[in-house]
Image (tube, rainbow, N blue to C red; front, side):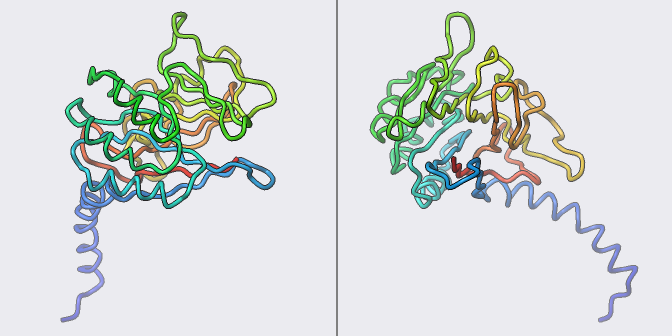
Length: 256
């Protein structure tokens, strides 16, 4: 049966909204990509993974696939910038999955990690078992003393940010992208954040439909700030609804 041009166009127009809904609800939320971020002008000396906002909610197979992707990249170390689980009841399983990371893993808490009111003891043990650390306004000298890794969990006079160290590459981890404006002129070689989920729904040629709080203009990607370059990842999970459009979840492979 032949379909004339007018009927074809009409059918395509009617089908498009359903295709977009199917993509946003059933395809993109699980379709994790690997984003490569190279910041070295010459031959990079370190390669590591940044991921964020796992929001584990009992979806073990998906979280295990994320860990498998991380391990397939054979990173020197791994950085996580908050929101391990959706609710406290999911933490034990989330930590079982994260224990499978085969590189030193360093991380900071996000708002869901605090909202869940879970004790951090198990998280601290999990990260330490990988050779890394759960950083609560702390720093670690790693990579043969070439990298100073700083984790910011809270801001304020009672929670000072460890300063950058001269002669080293200083990498700063924190959850809320807007915090990049709060470091009092300190300079870092790289800052990494999450929280925004890339805003989950991004309209082509327009941008995000809704931007979460504590994100400001730093919604997704690489930004140049007064304190140095900031990369905000689209993260892994979703909140509050399982929808992503034009904003796939990602694991970031960083080369410096």
